[in-house]
Length: 372
Image 1 (cartoon, one colour):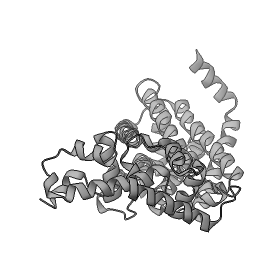
Image 2 (tube, helix red, strand yellow):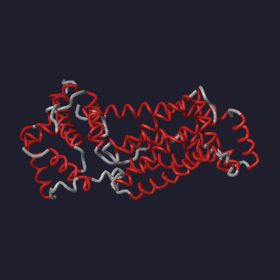
Image 3 (spheres, helix red, strand yellow):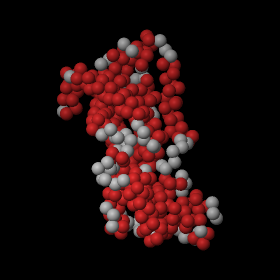
Image 4 (cartoon, one colour):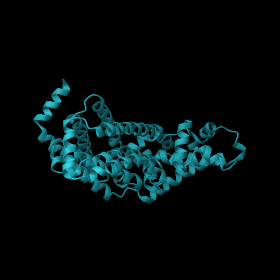
């Protein structure tokens, strides 16, 4: 019943949805321009997030053309979204992956993620190079029923997106201990909004593909994308550093000078060297504040502004360095990795592996083999 009401309302107010799609397309261009202007240091993350926004812009534009049947006036734009949308999952996953990864070098292996998009592009090259009449015939087949290409690539796309949604969630789970600190980073929040959108889109696409393969269920995804872009635009307008994760504005009213930040950071490092507090897996920002008799927000500000790190990342680096010393010592080679991780201050082996890989680009076991 709800679905029927939704379809009827879309048929009556299709022009309003067209305005919404056009508005969403405009916003995606605005946010893309903002991201290009951003001074965010994680440039690889920014590149992949930029790719996500561009794909969304094309998808919204195509949704507008398809919903209004204006695609018949621009037949050469037929299927331009198909190969791009195959890059949506990989781009979002890699944006998150490089957000957590300390290295900023793009690896050649990352190109493998885009092989399905490349295969799709090569498949549709004959259609892209066809004349207008051929493309219009193709369009008529799409509107009259389910085209074979829609079945094949629709299924492949949903399978691929399901896989990447799993890996995105897995990456968030591995780094769950840093989740609250990441939420304080302006750049992480739009990334999280995109991930949530990705999940809703995938669920909607699965329903559409298996139960309701028609025009109007496809519009739902475009509405979702437009709604998320409205949210991101409002947040961007209300906070200029939205895409920068810029901490200078965040701590503008704290009153701490740069020299005071350096002094606090020196005290933190000194107590770590003297008492190895970081090896306590239960060490929190508040407990460190109590030990130093310095307000927690001052410590967080000093670490963030002076090093460009969150408190969790800072602690993680100290623990990884401790683990590296333990792994290099040949007398410790009989010790399990779980034991070494706990000696360094990690609560679990999974947290140890994730943090070690994030900071070194390799696993603890691989690192240990270099010294055997």
